[in-house]
Length: 340
Ligand code: KG4
Ligand code: ZN
Image (cartoon, rainbow, N blue to C red; front, side, top):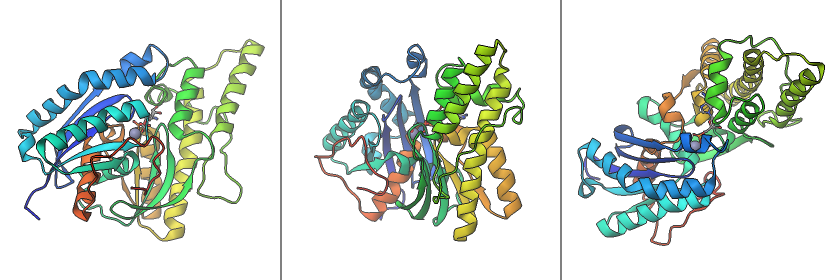
């Protein structure tokens, strides 16, 4: 294989239009993200059709900027990588069609990447020493998975959510207390002024499945608490509610992930996905891992939420394995982790 492998990666699975140039899977030469958050905030959540339309408007400029900032041309690229699932189908299609057109015109190999594999790979970018096997807790807006990363791109799923994803719970609770979209970062911020022990919310465990998660009961408990307070004419301390809810989520995430690491004998634990940028989760995981003698890995917040650098990192390891997709690559909105 030639000395340095350069990959142009594209990500458009939800509401960020992103492109990045990554060298050898771990060196990010550019990481351009055009966020649609302000637009979707007007509607209280991501509107799929608006997301697709925005992607098509922005994608060429985002790619051009990514190549320019990296000081590279399309000719320098060894492969074109793109997220092809899971995600919003119309949003994915924009990135997939773009990547196919570029790869075809420039006669470059095409590599389709699983979005969650990308989130996990975000850990490789700043942690040069991290190599599989390790345990990874994936917590995003659509996914909550506890996995063993057995090899690059090879996963064993230990547990998953039975209902809402962790990020979804943050978004729904934020909406209920009037914080708006996107809920995660807003709850994170407000919770800093609150008492996490003010309200004892339930920490749901799934009977007989110690690595599974369930957040719908917690969400209902928060809604019931709000309704009760309203009926009694009591004022709710927003910061205390946010901090107590956040603690209930974080405690369960940390307990399950650390239990898996201990029971399965792993001394490396990573976190990934948008919720991995939560300050309470990072601090709590750090403290518990230190106590248990587990090495804790996490990406910087900008690499936790959707970006294309993580797709470029995952694509490099697929490229090395010889994975290439054909011109018939399609968007797969419900693509399962580990499927190709
Ligand atoms: O990974 P991501 O950017 O997109 C998906 O693949 O879903 O994750 C987005 C999710 C949203 O639910 C958002 O509220 C949540 O991550 N999130 C956070 C924080 N930042 C983003 N949740 C808690 N605390 C945060 N600081
Ligand atoms: Zn994501």
